[in-house]
Image 1 (cartoon, rainbow, N blue to C red):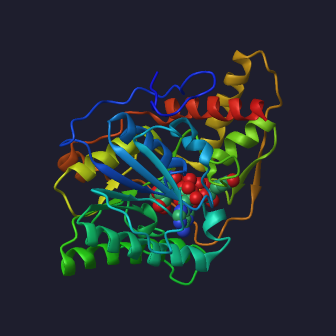
Image 2: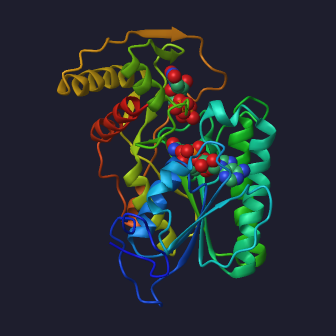
Length: 347
Ligand code: NAD
Ligand code: UDP
C-alpha cells in the first residue's frame, strides 16, 4: 500500500501496481500523447512500472480515462485533457507521440481534423521537443506504404498511397508527420525516432473501435454476423500489443534514428482471421458453460483503397534493436477475447 501522507483516504489508501524505485539520475519525465488510447495506455503502464514519471495527454476522442484509472492518484502519474492540435508547455525528457485516431471509421469521420492532428499535432510535439531538448518518438504506420507494390514491406519502400482517397487523411497525415520529424532533426537537431507500426490488437481496444479485430470479436460474442468487407482475401499481419510496447521502448532507448517497422510477420487473410476468432470465442464461452450463438460470415462491399496485402519485413528491428515479436497472434487473441467477454458481462 502506498500513501500520500497528507491525504486521508476513507477505507485506506489506494492500491497501485508495483512501481520500481529509480534513483533521480535514472528517473525520466516522459510525455505520452494519446496516453488514454489503446496502445498509449499499455505504454503508460510499462513506463510507470519501470519507475518513471509519466504525463499522459489526450482529448478522449477515441481513448478513455478508464484505461488509466488504475494510476489515478499515483505520485508519478499525471493526466491532462488536451488536444495536440493546440500547443502545450511542459518540461519533459522524452515524448512518445501517439495522439491520432487509428481506426478507419474514426479517422474518416472528420478527415480535416485527422489531417490537422497529423500535421499540427506533430508540429506542436516536435516544437516542444525542440524547446526542452527532449527525445521524440513518432508512432507512424504501415499505412505510409499505402496499397503496397512490394511484399513484405521494408523501410526503404517509398509507398503507394492515393493522396485523394478516403484513407488519405490518415496516410498522408502520417507521411507529413514523418517529413516534419526528419525536417526538425535536420534543421534543429531534434533527437528523433520513428516507428512504423503494423496492425496491432489487444485488450483496451474500444468496443466501438471499428478495426477488424475488435469488430470480429464483438460480433462473435454477440452472435451477430461477421462483416467481411470484400471477398476476405486481403491480408494483414497482426501483432499483440505487448510486443509493440517492447519495440517502442527499445527504439526510444536506441541510437537508431531512421524509421523502424514494428509488427508481427505472421500473415492471415481476413477470412482466415474471421474463422479463427469465431472458434476462439466459442472455446472461451464453452469454458464458462455459455452456449451462445455461433456467428456466420457475411460479405459486404469492399472499402475504397483497402490495402490488399500487408506484412512487415522486420529485419531492421532485429538488427538494430534486437527486437522480435514474442507473441503468436492466436495467444494474443485469447487474451483479447477474454477482455471483451469480461467487458460484455460488466455492462
Ligand atoms: P487509439 O485510437 O486507441 O488511440 C489514439 C489516442 O489518441 C486516443 O486516446 C485518442 O483519444 C487520442 N487522440 C486522438 N486525437 C487526438 C488529439 N487531437 N489530441 C489529443 N489526443 C488525441 O489508437 P491506437 O491503436 O492506440 O493508436 C495509437 C497510435 O499508434 C496512433 O498514432 C496510431 O496512428 C498508431 N498506430 C497504431 C496501429 C494499431 O494497429 N493499433 C497501427 C499503426 C499505427
Ligand atoms: N475489415 C473487415 N471487416 C471489418 C473491419 C475490417 O473485413 O469489420 C477488413 C478491412 O477491409 C481490411 C482489414 O479488415 O481489409 C483490416 O482492417 P482494419 O480496419 O482493422 O485496419 P487497416 O489495416 O485497414 O487500417
